[in-house]
Image (cartoon, rainbow, N blue to C red):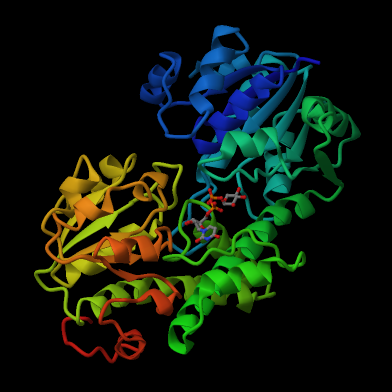
Length: 468
Ligand code: UDX
């Protein structure tokens, strides 16, 4: 049954939410104050790289079920309205979640709703990731403008992975709804009925705080798995084990599971780092510290530092003047997002150590160039790796697997690949004449590369003054 929906914020989450709600049959207005972004969307383009999104945006816009506007006032005139707030909640300087955009939006909605449609019933759905207790604060703001019978606040956290967000929305492991209003709960059941009807699970919590905390708990568990497998990768290098085989074997235990167990350069993105910091901040303020979550943050930071030292170790401990190609800049494959991407930390460290860097990413060259204009951004892999002393794989783009590595061995200065995603086939690289260094795969390290100097470097006792 079609419902009136307004989505406030057309970022990674808001745009996917609006488009997918239209896709399942609702009438959706996406509102944003960024007129440049709205112009792109109204023109039928997408301001972000998200597979499958452009198609459903265009199709639903053509069917008249999806529109983009900067006019929140008009959108608030609908008698029965479900209003999603999907504005950003970035990390504040003190590590807490910055909720200024959220509360500015809520205050505007409260004022305009009371002026435009005081008798209707509005469900304000907090889709943004927010600290526990935020929905109650939103409720208080709305109560100062609207009678309690005319609105309800619902927590409906998202579990969308960038790069497969449309898939995750249309085929959710679960939909979580936290609210105390029976009327709002009935409305949310109607809203998600097309997905529930396909067998997807709706989890209802009558304590909104439970719903808010579920989001953080999910991300901390996922980040902890990644942090732990990265620590095992480092241990594998010291003892001669293989982390890919280890990950597969422990992941076959259904209580562990194979997902989020792939060793790499450390986790990044706009969620895990931010949500972990916000959770630790919240737990601290509640005098319920969470040392495991704190350790995951520290472990990930240390892992990214050690990855940079690993590259130094593979280049005899000194990258001063060395030409290094970084393949992959986004925080993972399938997105153009470089927020807290490990590649960004790596570039900063290697530039500080005097390396000369080139880089290529199929979608993220442009945002990275805004941060590091001194890096040479190539239009293709071959241009990026020409005459380099080492190639570093930072993002697991499929195209990197299909490269003509035999030809690339003829254009590099030194045939060395440091694959921080274990993305490539080590034996194929070796057959093409490359020395290969993976993460947690010492049996494939056919470079003159020994874990001992690496571990010495990782303790800050570098074998060379330049590998600081
Ligand atoms: C995450 C959560 O998965 C999602 O449920 C939540 O809604 C938002 O945050 P996202 O940050 O988009 O999604 O990406 P995800 O696929 O979870 O990867 C996060 C980081 O972990 C990336 O840097 C990725 O490269 C890394 N990662 C992921 C690993 O290093 N190993 C893995 O096995 C999985």
